[in-house]
Amino acid sequence: MRKVWKEIDGGREWIVDGDLKDFFGSVDHEKLLTLVGRQVADGRVLRLIKAMLKAGSYGQGQLFPSERGTPQGGIVSPLLSNILLTPFDREMRRKGYQLTRYADDWVLTCKSVAEARAALAAATRILEQLGVQLNPQKTRIVHVQQGFDFLGYRIVRASGKRKLPGSMIRRWSPTGLIVYPTRKSIRRFRDRVRTLTRRSAPRKTAELIQELNPTLRGWGEYYKRPHPTALSPTRRLDSATHLVASFPPVADSGLEAVVPSQAVRRVWSGQPDLANTFS
Image 1: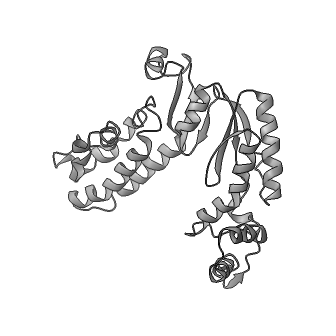
Image 2: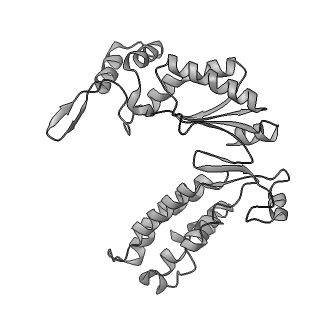
Image 3: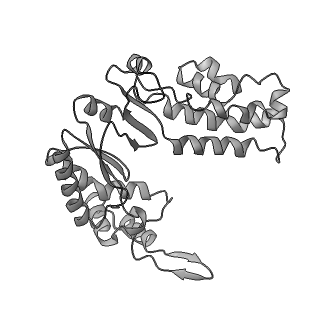
């Protein structure tokens, strides 16, 4: 995230927001195994990986063969995706493009729309050689003023027309560049809290707090430091605080002040003593 932020601040304001079409379900086995073979010499390991790829899936009483793809959610799939896409990284950088990739999620930062179009064309050719296709409906070229999502963050150069006052934006970032959790990320977080605090599953306060801790701390730790001038991840969570505060055992326990947005805010602000309130 810091790399992308630095590049945008340096004038690379046109973004190629790439999306791979059914990546884990469409990987070419032979091309992948060839690339793995360049990194692994042990034949036993290669045979094991091939067996995992060809294992197939079972459903509706029958076995379906796996002609392409890697097991989505499998422990080895992220490693295999990196092995497959490393040539893509190297070739794009050799051509002079600024690529930032994590697993199958990637963006290119460019200085002009013409450079962005050229970069997208180059990326398409290289990926096709690797047996990977771009999703034309989700891959796009945007200016940072329009904003884009990357790794659960929304990155945008804000203006005074947005809900936040211009003076507040400039106080956080003189250039107006801000980053905050995407709506999808916040929705997933709130849904998770709702599930943990559902009234249909009564439990002791201590048990509830113990179950909430990993979610609150994990979410806060991930979103607390994308960049020194990023917005606090809790600005859009205030409406969710009732999910815990209104839960009867918590409300009666004297812990009503310790609710999701406050807990995440304490983690975000780097106050471990306060962040451990749920210990």
